[in-house]
Every structure is written in structure tokens, then in C-alpha cells.
Length: 111
Length: 114
Image 1 (cartoon, each protein chain N blue to C red):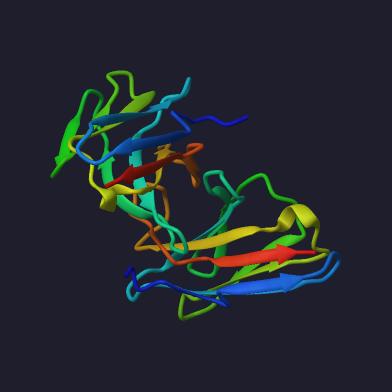
Image 2: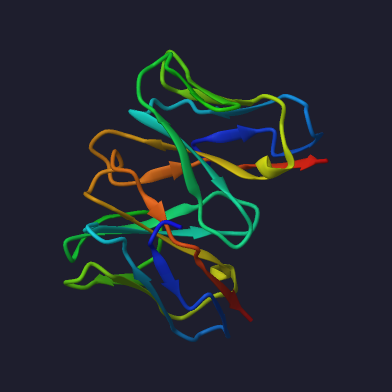
């Protein structure tokens, strides 16, 4: 059973469009991380959100942690081809030893 | 680049064989976690090593084992390989145990079991 479900699984858009990726769970997490992974490489951390309702911005990327700390979203404004990749959310629970990854969203941005 | 290196980059084995994958952690990091990423899926936690001791394990059978050395580099060993073991194996290093620490991932080793 996958604890963290991401939607959509695949997204193919034109440069300049906006998009939102969702990460949902029935479990509460102490923190949630977003990663981007490109072919042939390991995941690279984009952001960590810790507080329920927290919003963080990284240039054109906006990350939000749900009030109940069970879900998160990633919004990209004016997508560019360089945003292409696999986006992964990952949840951590206090006093546990494993990072639980979501199912992933594969984004393709065409010029 | 994260400073985490893995070897080899690619590997082909046959069912029943054994494999050893290696990971060098980033300087100053004492914790290494290993993940299995099947094609089209997110990484699944295998286990974590902190100061040479196993510090937690995911839902993987005992034929998946590991080691961490005094310099904090690590090995992942898989015995009696099965076709379903084909995946990208990622290691990640961090400054301390617990998932609150930022993990830095290596590029992975892609294993194909025939």
C-alpha cells in the first residue's frame, strides 16, 4: 500500500503554462519534502515544509503543506522546458527511520 | 552534484547470483540510507546505517543486507537475486540519523537481473 499518492502521474504541457501537482495521504507527517529527479540521476531536494499550512516559494515554484499535515501541493508558474523531470514528494514521521516517497509525477514541458 | 558517489553505475546479473553495490557519503556525513526505485515508481526505503550500525529497515527480506565502514561509506549486498530486484538502487547520506536531516542522493546504480 502506497502511503503517499501523487496526482497526476503524468503531465505534458507547453512552455508558459501553469500546473499543480498534488501529494495526498491519510497519514500525518512531521515534515514533507519535494524532490526533482532527472534521468540518470538521484533525486535532488527542492524544499522541506514542516508546519501545517506553510507556504514556501522557490522562484516559480510554490509549495504548500496542508493544515492537517497530510497533504501537499506543488504549483509551477510559467513552466519551462528545464522543469521537465520526475517530481517526488516524501514524508517523514517524527521518531521514525524512514522517508516515505510518493508515487511520482512525471512532467514534460515542450518548447 | 551532491558529493555522494555510487559504483558501479550499471550492472547486469542473472537470477541466483549475488551483488554488492557501493556508496561513498558526502564529507561530514555519518548516516547512509539505501533505497530501491523500480521503473516508474518512487524510491522505497531499504535500510539506514548510522555510525556503522543498522538504524532501521524497510519491508525488504533478509537477503538484502548492508555494511557501513569507519569512513561512513557503505555497501548494499543482495543475495539470491530475483528478476524483481531489477531497479535503480540509490544511496543517500545525511549528517545524522532520523528523517528530519536533509538527505543527499547519489546518482544510483542501475541493476538488471536476467
